[in-house]
Amino acid sequence: MIHGIASAKSVYKVKCESLDACPESVVGLNYDGKSVCTGVLVAEDIVATNLHCIPEDLRQGNDVSCKGRITVTFPASRSREEQFEDCEQVKWVSPQLKDTPLTPDWAFLKLSKKAPRMYAPINTSGISDGEILTIFKIDPTDKGTGILRKVSCPAIQNSLANPFFVGVKSPILAMVPCESIKGNSGSPLMSSSMEVKGLLNSSGTASDVNLKKAPFYHVSFGSNFACLNIPGLAVANAPHPDCNKSIVSENIRTAASTLISRFTDPLMKSFNSDVNTELNKLHTQSKFVILWDVDQKNKAFDGIQTRVSDVGFKPSCINFKKEKMRLKQGALQTGLVTYNLDFLEWGLEIHLDGSGRPRAELVPKKTQSTLQFSPAHLTTGQPVNFKYGNQSFTLPFCEDIKNLTAAK
Image 1 (cartoon, rainbow, N blue to C red):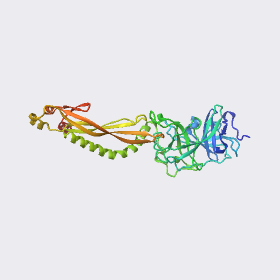
Image 2 (cartoon, helix red, strand yellow):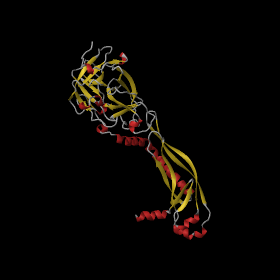
Image 3 (cartoon, rainbow, N blue to C red):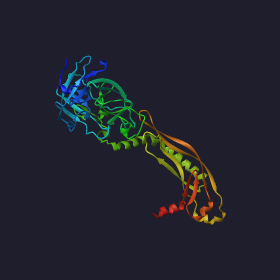
Image 4 (spheres, rainbow, N blue to C red):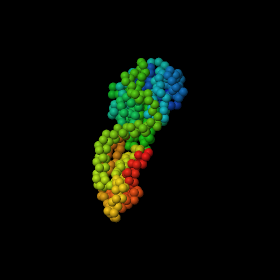
C-alpha cells in the first residue's frame, strides 16, 4: 500500500539497499518531475535538503509556496511502508549560491502535513577534524528509481581540498576521500548518535580550489549545521565568525596561501638564524671584500611541484673605499684573486598527504663555489666584473649605493 500519492509526474521511487541500514528519516526529493536529490526529515513536517535542489524561482526567499512543484519519497523499511508527501512551503533558505562549491547550501521545506516517521534531530555542535560522518545518500539509477545507501567519510580540516575548513564551526567542510554523484546532494551527514550535523553539497576536485593537480581524490563538500540560526529548529550557541562570510572563487587562493603559511611560518625562526650564520660565513670567507645579499626565488604552489622557494646568496657590492684603493694602486696584484666558498643554501618544499593536507620542510644543500676578480680593476672606481661560480656579476662599490640612497 502506498500512502500520500502525489501527481504521477513527480513520483520518485526509492528503495533501500539494505533494510538494516534504512533510516526512516531519509527521503528522495523530486522537483518538477525531472530532477532528483536527497533530503532528511529534521522535524515532524520539515525536510532539509540543498538550496540547489529546488527550482531557481523558489530560491529567492523564505515562506515561498512549493505546492505541486516538489514531492518527497520515504522508502519502505522493515517497519514502514513506502510513502509520498507534498511540499507546502520553502520555509528557510541559505544565502544565494556563489561561483564555488565552498558555499553554504541548504533549504528547509515544510510538508503539507506531518509525516508519520521518526525524524533525525539537528546537531549544531560542529564537526571535528577526522570525525567519521555517516552519510545516507540516494543514488539515482537509469531506470528512474533511487537506491538508498549508507557510506562513511572522514571530515578533514586544514586541507587544500577546502582551505576554509579549519575549525569545528567552519561553515563548509571537506570529506576526503568521499565519493558522491549527482542525486546525492542534500544527503544528511550523521553523527554516531544519528543526529544531522550537516548536508552533503557536492563533489569536487583539485581544480575547484585552484590547484592544477593534487593527491586527493573523491573529495566531497558539505554545509556545517553549526552555522544554523533558525529559531524553533536549530540555533547555534556560538556561530563561527565566518558563517556569514561570502566565499567567492578569488578568495580560495588567498585562503590556501594562509593555510600553507600555518605550516611554513614555524620554520622561519630557525631558518632566519641559519641564513645569518651562512651570511657571516660568506663575508668571512671572502675577506669582507664583498658584501652579500640573500637571493630568494619563490613560486606559487599549484599542487604539482613541491619546491616553492629556493634560498641562496649573491654578491651585493664591493666593500672597499675607492679613495683607499687609489692610494694602494701600486701595491695591488695584477693577477686574479680567488676565494673558495663553502656554505649552505636551502629549498622550501611543500608536500601534500592523500587528504590534501600540507607539510612544509626546509631542505639544506651544501654548496661549494669560487669568487674571482682582478684587484687592479678596483682602482678605476667603476663597477667591477666578478665571477661567482658559473655566474658573472658587475658589482658597484657599497659607498656608491649608500650615497645614491642618501641623495634620494
